[in-house]
Length: 99
Image (cartoon, rainbow, N blue to C red; front, side):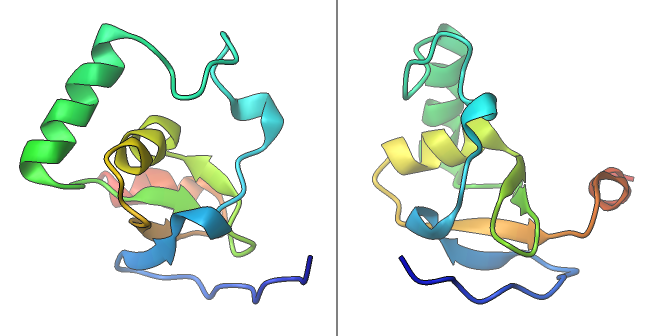
């Protein structure tokens, strides 16, 4: 498998192919079910189906998922192939997004 190009840090969300995003195994749901089965997850899917993806997921420059696991999984469950993402250098930048 070839190495993918590193992404540049972004101030606005960009579209990233879901299949190119790496989710570390340690970050899978505790039940090891994919997708996670819960009423909250189903509610998130309903909300995203009605309103779209309002909050981006956060990736590092190597397309490793830092935050937004359930948003990513819900969007993928809805049949989407691209997700809105912000490329950040560290978790401090994630906090700045929400201020």
